[in-house]
Length: 70
Image 1 (cartoon, rainbow, N blue to C red):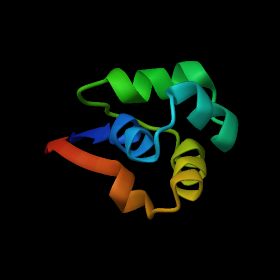
Image 2 (cartoon, rainbow, N blue to C red):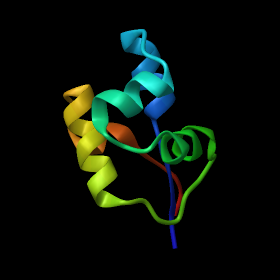
Image 3 (cartoon, one colour):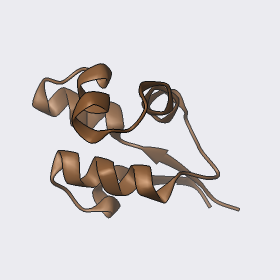
């Protein structure tokens, strides 16, 4: 199974937002965002959260996800 990393921290920094601001703007729970931002590799991710984040950052889901191990 592959692992992915979410580029939440990088995308937030590009916009000058904190993770708390991203949580407020996206509706994704802060603790979930913190986990996504800190993890070097995740096996599973909530698709609904990915969709919310993509809309918040105005990017495609593919721009948030980085494959770190396949």
